[in-house]
Length: 329
Image (cartoon, rainbow, N blue to C red; front, side):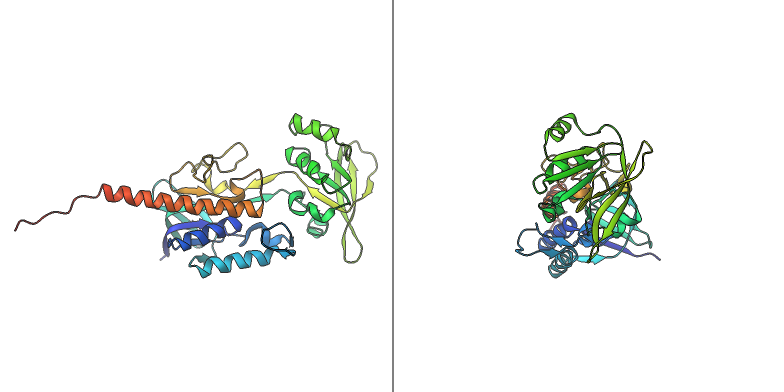
């Protein structure tokens, strides 16, 4: 016999967006259930130093921040569940989600906060130096490379935007691209080529990220030339892998509208998806900002949108309820 767990609000994902939604929903008396998924705490659990989250004068640790958010959500009444959802039925309310252990979760509303994963080069040397000179977010970590030499790897909009952003901190930015032309929008390319602090290295791929020093950190890149020329080494202080993001939306394909990049589509100025009663927040619907603070903001919006939806639905049900029968005296 499998378990069935019901709530007025199910929240799928437990990063800044999902936990903020849980805090607001719990305070509204909705008794939300947070299904934490494969990576409880989201991307911040693999982020070490956080300097740009409001309210903290000193650098804080990403895992610590997520522990505090979860503790706050539980303190006000949210329930955390460790499970991985493998199937959804959004064809009617209440919505039904199935966990990989067989548990069924039933919710009057659903908030999706499954996030997005940065794409990596998937190299052992890259994995070894993540957080020690290798990053996938210039706006998150660029501040740590003030006055230092950095590279950005990629050729699309993300790479060009991150290279331009890094000129705010670094006097020498190198964009490394494996082809002889960029895929980024022309207006971005024009800005890139016009910037005096940016150099482009064409037809190069990263062969390895080189570690050194004590404590160990990134000190150089070994580059492979697409033309077959000998490998070359360039000394750098930081490397930003900017080859895109993959939103965690596969579970909702065929159930909810996605945009051309597979992010969940929401109504402008809200978190409403294409199915009434289903809301999306955080990086799963935001391909522009992708910051912890913006994710938290949309989590707040999702909880408020869902609370309003439930209130309106209950009002409609009361309006259409049959009149009680009167008994003749």
